[in-house]
Image (cartoon, rainbow, N blue to C red; front, side, top):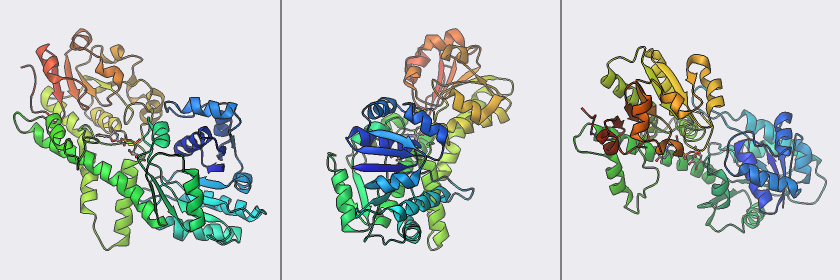
Length: 446
Ligand code: UDX
């Protein structure tokens, strides 16, 4: 099929490159000419394992190209995916400025089409229930002068891509969820996705919008739940959240995923979508989403608990050199949006600690986010050197290989606050390295 993808950010680029890999002809559109040039050179403007390879493959085979002109891509395509960002406004609600602008251009493109085809416009951006039907559809109809469901199709098809695993998540999804306005749109999308070996769930537009938000809300709830259990475990002798999570996760009704206690969830989706859902419900005014608000509240405090623990152990952090290992919101990405590291570092700076941080890929992102308020180490060794304590904030594979001897050799005092359960505390404590772990009521060497 001929696919146009409006918005070549994270979701758009992954979607476009993967559809090209599957044999479709893809045009990626972005208003940023510099980004378009980069993509056409085969360069991915962010860190995502495997994406560069399939993009280059698609470019070499002439299956994909990036342009800045939405209208011409809409005139050409069988299916148009709207993949623009939906950021959070200061009150937590979703900002649909970009969706509105992209929809207008798509509407203009539809107006200029003279063929007898049936282009299907598909919203992939995360939008609150009702947006596709009551905002996107009227704009498209107004600007095109054509009728949805008659002269062009309309659907909503959310993505469930995890950063760092997005290509795999796209090509091997657990499920594909399609909400279509009409049967023709539904059939066209079914055939686009026919090669995928997973359930295809068909429902209406508003339900898929809710499925997207509810999925992320559920994942966030699971994390805040296990973090709360971890916090309880810390105060009861003999308890370890790892064992508790294992015991819960073996129940098939629960499953072991997303039960890793830590310093809280970050990233571009979970916090944003949860806030958007809360704001959406509160705006409706007839229900208070108490559980979802608590999930956010637990998550707000979770990163700071690690700093509180350090204060309890060290007394004051003023003037102390604190090594922070990991800045990205999770491993295998350079993304620091809503990263727990930001909250932790800001708090450490408030307490007048001297912060030195290391991340294998997020250093440049961190410089933009945190400026020169902290020192950026080039290596783990440089980060640990002379430190009074070390915070493990992201569970990069590289950190898992560190041995107690590394900390003893490099740090002023071998003291670790393991916010991601990267280390076996028994092993470290046996080798005289103080290792405090999230969710574990077993304290130091002394
Ligand atoms: C998420 C959803 O997983 C994906 O389906 C959706 O489309 C986009 O949002 P992503 O933001 O890439 O993906 O990250 P994810 O792997 O879900 O992790 C989110 C955050 O939760 C990270 O900060 C991670 O460290 C944290 N997390 C995850 C935990 O703290 N514990 C866990 O058990 C799992």
